[in-house]
Image: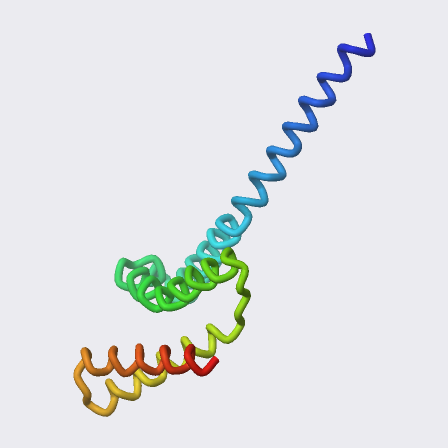
Length: 127
C-alpha cells in the first residue's frame, strides 16, 4: 500500500511542477493579453467604437515597440554571454537621438542612419 501512494505523489508533484512552469512561461503573455483587453474595452467604453483594435493602431504599436525589441534582443545576447552591461541602453538612446536630430535637420536617411551608427560605435569604443 505504501508503494502505490508514492507514485501518485510523484505524479501530482510532476503535474504541479509542469503547471508552475507553464504558468511561469506564459505569465507575461497572459499579462499582455489582459492589458490589451483592458485598453480595447476602455476604448470601446469611451468612444463607442473599437479604434484600439484597428489594423492601423496595431501597426503603429508594432512599429513603435520595434526599437525596444531590438535593444532587448541585444541585451539578452550580452547577458547570455556573461557581460552584463547596463550602458547599452544609454548608447541606444544616444544613437536614436543623433539619428532623429539628423532627420529633423534635413539630412538624408542614409546619412542619418550612418551618423546614428557612428554615435553608437563611438559610445561603445569610449565605454
